[in-house]
Image (cartoon, rainbow, N blue to C red; front, side, top):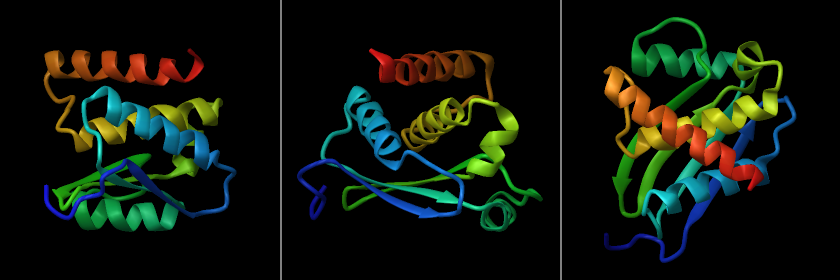
Length: 139
């Protein structure tokens, strides 16, 4: 991994208007990466509005409308990838928006690391990790 960062870095970009605890969510992304054995990497974490998310969803997934989280793996020169979260969509999923944002950040990071939830066994494994890492926020 030449040219990659020697320390963990989560770069946050907030391009929407809903309140977001950027520091807590960036720290949660870092803890998830460390727990998965990925140190010395860089991650981009973006919070976007519905219009931008809908555009990304159509452009990269060929699906209409906004979604709550998208992950774009890169894993080159230490940049593991981008996680894009739409807080407005998170608010539609759960009345506890802060909890939903924590879940979505961990979910997005796990996707960057190759986890998926198409098959039942994979879904159970990914959900168990999500529960453990989101729960680690309070321990």
